[in-house]
Amino acid sequence: MNASTTAAATAADSGARATERFKNDKTIAGTGTSQERVDLLAREVLDAVYGTIRKHKLTYAEYNAVKAWLIGVGQDGEWPLFLDVWVEHVVEQVATEHRHGSKGTIEGPYYVPGAPELGSSGSVPMRDNESGIPLVWTGRVTSTDGTVLDGAKIELWHADSDGLYSQFAPGLPEWNLRGIFTTDTEGRFDIHTMRPAPYQIPTDGACGKLIAAAGWHAWRPAHLHVKVSAPGHELLTAQLYFPGDQHNDDDIASAVKPELMLDPRPAADGGQTVAYGFVLDPA
Image (cartoon, rainbow, N blue to C red; front, side):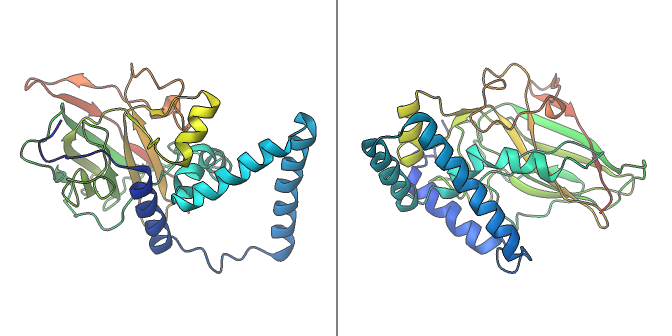
């Protein structure tokens, strides 16, 4: 464990930070959704709930347990965590099913805009004693017609070797393992970072209670988060995974796709190298 990391992220602290980030960073007003569509979606969601209650003959004791749990999710600030872990992967599938370029997956609750801009080649901010396996990642960004995308942005963020994210766990520098890279005139980028670790989502709050009550596990496989963007093209949000992780096949967030699997190779310095690029769809 890194010496400067003094404690793991708690559900309440992570939830509060994720909720505040969502309020600050996401535009949720004026989405243009019509009253008729809100009526349709709300009624169908409620009908699905009614169907489950009737099918399984929910008791009042169970209803009150669910009610208390829903209140707890709000009190713990864990709605972003709950929705991103158990719901977002289906929204992402539906929203991107028209695309012909690279596959994407969920954003998750730990994205923070405004990371340091580092050019086309460089290292993400990290501590002098950053532990883990050094990782050099090279790639190219193109459009679906093969056009090289000069000036495309790759926003990168990921957990450290303890499975902790900066700005969501104590003891970490503000921009640790977060950075924005911009492709060169050939569409290329060269990123130096550290290989992240698998981690458990916070389990000391309401989401953890659900996991324990249902007999599930709380693990996510190791992954790199990216947002890839270029003028005139659709934003790509993805997570890149590492082969051999025991939770690639049972990720609690159901976000792993075979197209997002990396192929790390050993490097002379004891680290690893990986080549992986992106193809963006025109907007």
